[in-house]
Image 1 (cartoon, rainbow, N blue to C red):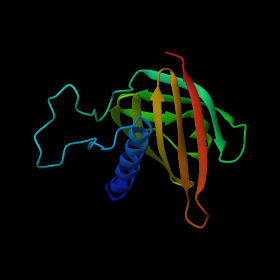
Image 2: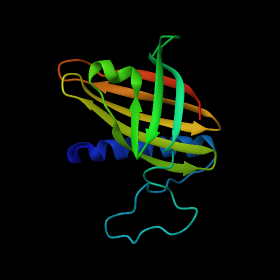
Image 3: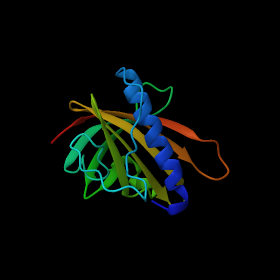
Image 4: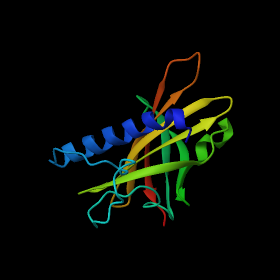
Length: 155
């Protein structure tokens, strides 16, 4: 993740945590990573940063908002990296991801980039064996396009 875009991805993650917690009846969000001057979190209830979803693969669809059917997609989390296979053809590769654990699942965010196609900011939630979320695709000279994603864990 580029340093200049890190605050945007962090903002999306905080928003995703707030939305997930509000849906669960919780009213406060917790930082996903300690502030630079804060000591490392040691409590088992503290939110995780990288790697919580590592080793998990989800198979499903990625579709444009408003359309009922999407394209096949495989989403993987490995080595602290997130990857969407349906975006390979457009030059989007793997990127670091961040997570926070809520009472009913794990929320995540990631920002993938392509030299020709811009960037995609991903936010989502993994609950039980299902991943749901969205991706916002931005590219200079075009309007932002929102996609939905829904996938089931394969392992």
